[in-house]
Picture (cartoon, helix red, strand yellow):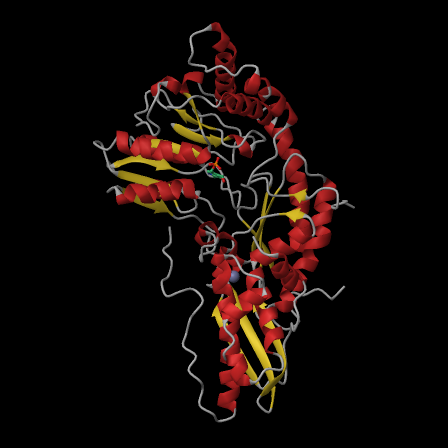
Length: 399
Length: 142
Ligand SMILES: Cc1ncc(COP(=O)(O)O)c(C=O)c1O
Ligand SMILES: [Zn+2]
């Protein structure tokens, strides 16, 4: 049994990951020893410059890209903003239409909303009950005014993996560019930007055991893209600002580690996830798995429990040392529950009753056992309080 | 984000459950809002002799229900009617601003239960006003 007094059972790796010691070790010399500005000409800046160049090669290798196509920035949100605003504005003469999906991260959705206010047209593609975009719907929505299609590689809430290569092909067939938010996918879905028809790709260091506030945008050579951050000539004149050298070095090391053995990593994590899913659905009545049964991130389990609300679940789990997350509105401060869960056709009640558990490299089978020993009682306690619980239904006997 | 008192009230709520022979029942909220609160009253004379609640909702909603029911037990119906969500929030030692709307449900549910009792007695209901739980606008769907 897990001794959760010692350490929390952290199952919220989609929110962020811990940083691996190897990553910290790689970064360490670049804070004080190799602190020089990579843009300076003296030899003292050679080490920081080499560090950034090496990281660029590491990121490129992980994506099947060329190093010159990698641009470092401050995270996934910036990469998404840059890709979408940058393509929309640079190609405005050719067209004013953008296609995205209903289940994108807010970094994409709110950017598209902003573009709408600037006069662009935006189509939000629906998803099926598992959260998948049908490439056929891209074909139907695309016009000769479409300059960009943006669909995420994998969803952060329900873990559903999209048919990215097919969607990219439809975009290319119609002369549009294809961007994908791969923030949750790096290290879990093997990526080859050529084979997957990707023109722009966003990634974020803190989702794969790298440092927070680091990210990169892959931009296929020849892609018309406006700058987002104006200023100095860093990143070949496309993204201003003195480089976050330790962060970039950490991002490079982290992506190298995360993509060294994706298959083996997924096998280990998915085995725990599948036991977690079976255990939860087997011990808690009126529960469902959200997302796709097979096309899902190896580390993602997302449930809805009828008659109870997610924030309450979260806090009772927290009281027992378990870190999880929910798509309930009450946790976000907004009044609407997760747009992702609603887009898959869940009722408000089911969306409010959602719980996301995302596994990571430090989780063990003991952690799974511990969650399975705690969760049924947590749900049972809340169901005994809820007016929605049908008499006698969905409540295990009081312990 | 919650105070320790809110967490304590939420993790060990009092007065939980259904009351089969209630004299007045009030239910407010909806699954769309994410919070539903149901209050059961046992009335003796003009006093609340017993009270129970059932709540579907967040920690703030459950803690507010528990606190509000503890506060109105033994009150006259008029006193219970004038209990405001501000009184409940104060007794909880405060709620995050985004969560105050969840506590409104508790005082609303109490008023609904009192008016149910009044209606059953053949008395005209008091004017509760409707504060609602979600505000008036349906949030847009991105
Ligand atoms: C799919 C997705 N896109 C974008 C982001 C934003 O990334 P960052 O936190 O690095 O800005 C996240 C992180 O929550 C994400 O999950
Ligand atoms: Zn609430």
